[in-house]
Image 1 (cartoon, rainbow, N blue to C red):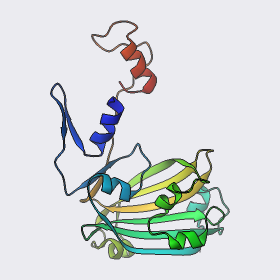
Image 2 (cartoon, rainbow, N blue to C red; image 1 turned 180 degrees about the horizontal axis):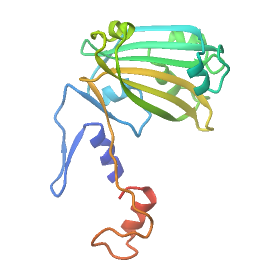
Image 3 (cartoon, rainbow, N blue to C red; image 1 turned 180 degrees about the vertical axis):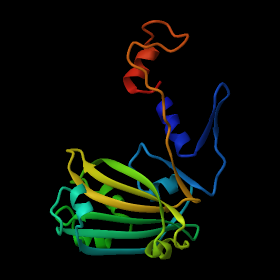
Image 4 (cartoon, rainbow, N blue to C red; image 1 turned 45 degrees about the vertical axis):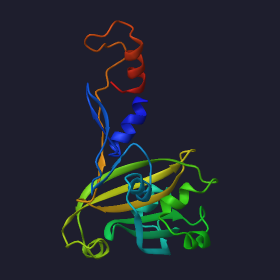
Length: 220
């Protein structure tokens, strides 16, 4: 229950006040998502009650540059499928999602026929059970291409989420370069103190089952 409430809090759906209780959060124009779950921008936005519109979408075949090749454990120049999607909420562009995947993993025809991002497409493929990602977050200055796609000024700060997605067998299959408007979308992180097993919290009894459970899950 505590973990479920934590997810709701990170998604901006409830407010938790210590010693008082949990409350439904008021709707906000800003969309927030936690980093602990691998989820598409659309699913995060819809969870917040927002309707997402696809402003543009393109599927092309490209060759892997050195960065993508290293992330996907491929040879530079390998054939990739690229899915670029620009998404908006209430008519305001918020996200540019740029996904790349080895051509051997997907059907180009199915990608073209789809309507969403590459991550949405992969989440529906039973033969490619995606499991987790390794991600990095940067604040970068928008270049001319990003400025046009996101409708911002050149050099304006945007949020850049670069991540490699893995299957449940630890195989890297997709690489993403995603960009977001910072005043409309943010990512929340909850950080906790993790104590070593056997180290008690103030006021707790030796061998407390609650302490033991928290230590095992790193949730002190």
